[in-house]
Length: 354
Image (tube, rainbow, N blue to C red):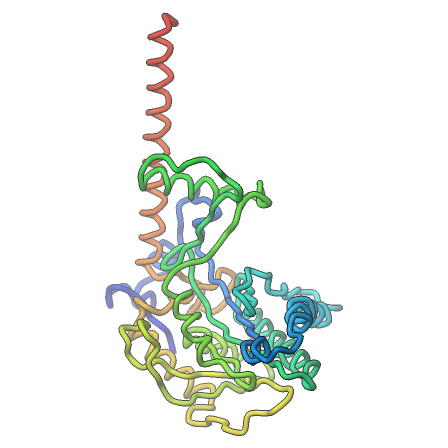
């Protein structure tokens, strides 16, 4: 089954020849690193019961500090153990930022096998951490989602400690973003730059965190589609469950969104196992329909290192928008250079310099 998320039904890659498909995969040779399409996985882990603990007049600060330290260690140790002796390394998700008692991680996805193992090891870290804190009053809950960059989501950058007043209009702000982006992706001055992620997929992910429970790792429908698609590449597919649909405020035009989750081991196991569509093939077909019906809202799927034709091409409208972004950036850069050169020439003429 092929997921054909395209603007025009005539642009289905299976209906065209290899030359057309090669063209649809092609990007300008001079495309900056930061504009190359990337699919990112986002993982949230949040303390459950922390609000009540803080209101209990008992000492809660040590538990929060331990969470920040111990969970990160659990993740790194889990991936280190998995990678030991393997030829192909699965990178541990990197810490993105904290949001109160919530820790956020992210990593780039390049193929189905990596996607599967990353989620599998994250679940293992959750299981181990939940078992570790079983005697306490706190627990953890987690959510996962994916987002495609630089369209329809975006990286945003700002320079830390920059006390200069903003100058210029929107064009100058966009130009500064491209400058900071290029520095970040070139590995320059990262200690001075903060990177964040914004867009419809990020909003959806944060909405989904409201459904998370300590016993249930909640995931977006497009992440579930990737995981069920990896079933033929692994010996033991992940036990995904589907428990109906609910409305997520502002997501896919407020239409019901599927509740898809994985059981998390540890204390207090979940007994309400949803088996409506536990079969990977049935769940994959269900996810595919939802994505195709809402492709403008849900992440188009693109894995840069995939050997499977469903994921080794970027939707044409995504490629076109990336090309337009790069065209506009080059035009703005040329105009800024011309203005700068013109200003220097005027200064030279006014000072009598030929």
